[in-house]
Length: 114
Length: 112
Image (tube, rainbow over all chains, first blue to last red; front, side):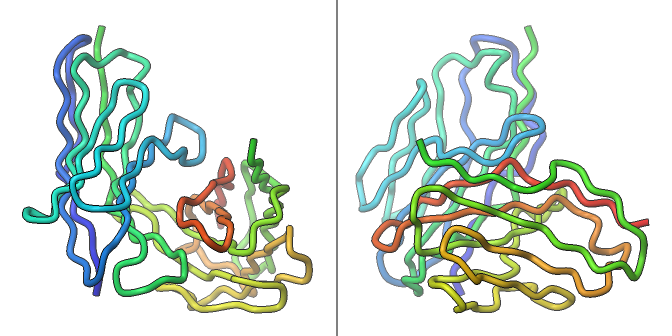
């Protein structure tokens, strides 16, 4: 079945450092890919998405490119801030199923220190 | 703005109690979902519904049931709560033709 694998955390960075959180997926068909963010004590918020190969999603300085050849959707940010500390989830939808279900990775905790 | 609300942010229940978790969305979305979130396991789908009175089992439905009597409301029921159901429960909704989900703030349930 479809699955998503994220790099294990926690990831600890200093402010203004470069961030990469790796995400790879296994899916049949043509899934859409998402990054969600969960700030402490809150629900998940959609951060960015890409719906087809080579699409780049971007929001709030974060970017991710849908790479079909490597089945990857790595999240990057050039300069992180303390306020980016959160849990980040990679997810896919629509691979072998079109019910709107999301398949999530296990989440990666990011801690940014001043 | 889409708003998904959950009836409680924190809940403490005793083993064997019947527990109701309520979720309401205000954007006329067809699909609604219940997940539980546990450290190291990410989000796991319990049940989902794509229409009023319709429901489908997710990956971990055992010990749970759901009810959707109105389009905007999707309830998760723990018939007899157990300690292994202590978790964060998240509700989400999405319109029919889209696949990006909108989440509520979550209910942290503790079963003692």
